[in-house]
Image 1 (cartoon, helix red, strand yellow):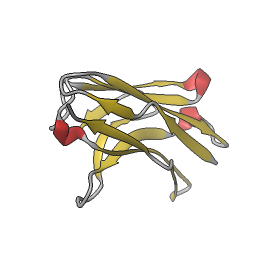
Image 2: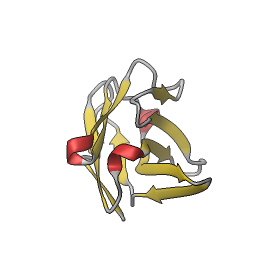
Image 3: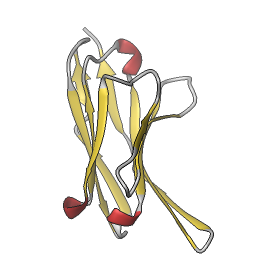
Image 4: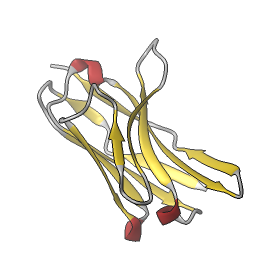
Length: 118
């Protein structure tokens, strides 16, 4: 199983960025997928998540600015980030989780750095 993130980088405050995560080795459409982030010296936190039924949830800090979406045909999940703030600076990691017969299957990507700075 592989989750490979791309699209991170340096962006100015107020700017936009889209990160992507391509999955392989799983039946992507069956999984809840999401993005977590971890800033330096802080705990990892959930940013956004989208279920197999396309229901979504977001951290309060990103509501109205970030949008998560998925393309099951491409086994890819996206996070569109608008109106970026310096406090959004973190390593963003992709997560995929599913429960089969009461057993949890969870996978993580390596992460991609997003830096918001002027």
